[in-house]
Image (cartoon, rainbow over all chains, first blue to last red; front, side):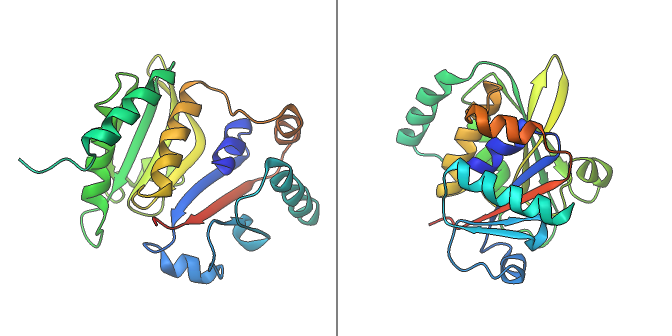
Length: 68
Length: 148
């Protein structure tokens, strides 16, 4: 899984795969409907669906520059 | 004797892909005693998977009685499974976790992540690696999936 691959490359990155139905309150909090749904930094960014690594990198760049 | 969770066919497929394992992997399972519908099954599933390779080492913990350890690994839900690199009894936390029973598509991700960690190689492109290695801010990715 892409998020896990990213976590492997950096001690700053953590990636948790969450079963949406068991943790439905958490899914609700982030408005998860379609899966996979990647929530970045508690909602600072979102990616719906499975995407290539370039897309994850682009969204991380956007989120991290916003949070600087 | 209770029936195993993995059928013979899946066992065979896993044994086959586990030929790709090279270095040891630590699997830390965190369960809890009450209100955890899938804890027992998750633990059993991990036990069955670990039996299929000597390179996989499972430790079982409790979210409450092992609260300090849970906090160390950033685990706050049960069942949770942490996958980490294991080198000469030294565990390296890579920030890789699963929350919930790893069934359905999560199961494939579990197997793939085990192999990735065992080979100590993310498999990402050089450009992605360069970007990630340069990060100096916390990044928390939560990927919501369903078992279907």
